[in-house]
Image (cartoon, rainbow, N blue to C red; front, side, top):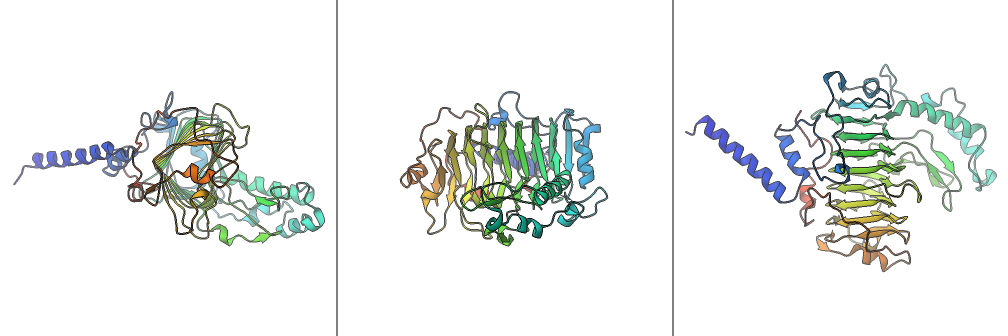
Length: 449
């Protein structure tokens, strides 16, 4: 029988061999997944690896890795999370471990709050709002104003006070493995701060009780809501890793229609706007959502910023904005797009490049159902660019830009003004992504402590 030390040596060699093979194969971040599952990684202090996307640029992204014990918190309620976050202007390094699922729609004592609670005392009622701004009497030329619109805004502000969590600089927010960690009904707001990490969390049911009617939005008007599950506004050096984003349990198919338009209670999953810069989004699962990721809030957002890397993410049951890009330099590589209809979410497009965005889409994999037009996988306004190669559709190399351009006058440009260099983990072939990403993406995959 082999000695104990010899058996340990063989085990060590096997672990090293598997990890090394994973890196050689180009899986990059997967190396950390495997080590974490073996208990070898401290998730709470881990920093973004070198050259892992735009967030590795310059000073890199370390979040709260330097936090002392006094600024390391374990939270399981909304009130505890608010206390741990502290002031948005406090730059002290902090680590916030989320244990279990936090319901944002609760008061400080943990009592569940409903839309009726937020509306109470404001004078708002949906029936009165619908009567006041019915297009047949109010018209379609101007935004709602007057008593009910003011009441709606007050009620929305009451909800926002409860469900918006402002994240300060130098912070890591991470789910405790094995606890189904996440936030329901809430929004992490990362605004005008630097150096933030968000990992291993499920964001679900981020819903606005009080959408606003805009009769001027499009030809028929639209209901617009607040609250992204995670929103970056003027944020820099942000790493969003191994999270799950979903509308569940209430999907858009359950939304009623008013004035002939869907009463939309969901906004974005992860929006990167207002001059945010140097962001890496990797190994997340985006599911069951319409307007999923916006990069750039307008066609004049911030020239020279909005530099974002998206890699090894899964997009399934997504209608649009996966992502919608404006202005910035965006690298989209080794992602899996499953475009088959899921829970009523029907694809409009995956990637949209507009407002002179410079997108490199490289070695991604699209799973497309029978009848789905390849030309509908991309979109643009005639000014954006999508360069890249190695993209597969159902396993076949496909020129997505050529397919799109053949059907429109608003053609995508095929060259960009930059070359990606921060490409850790870039796999030169997309063929294994459907199998690999099934077990290495989303919340609940990471372990370790």
